[in-house]
Length: 117
Image (tube, rainbow, N blue to C red; front, top):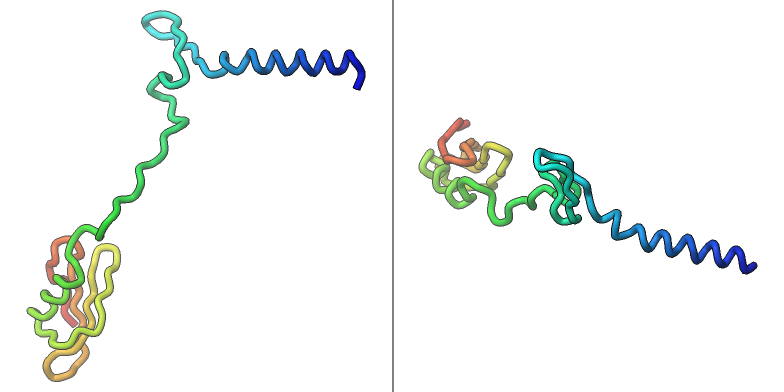
């Protein structure tokens, strides 16, 4: 490399390094006049680092599969084959005391019986 090219590259690197602290500040013009805000104290509308909250952990809210089976038994179901949780309902499939197929549909939050087929 030639000497002038090296000198210009060194000058450009110094200018970039000197401007980095200036980029981490913000000017705010408000009722109190002009203020310089550091990077961590930007205005209320600045959402660069905000992320949506993580989804809740643990069992889904509402009744459990065991509670759904207990409610289905109280509706006349004797053998329980499967319990399906959908968005707002819980479907319990099984058979009654005579062996006929039976389905009980429950509200997933409260456990109220919606339908018995």
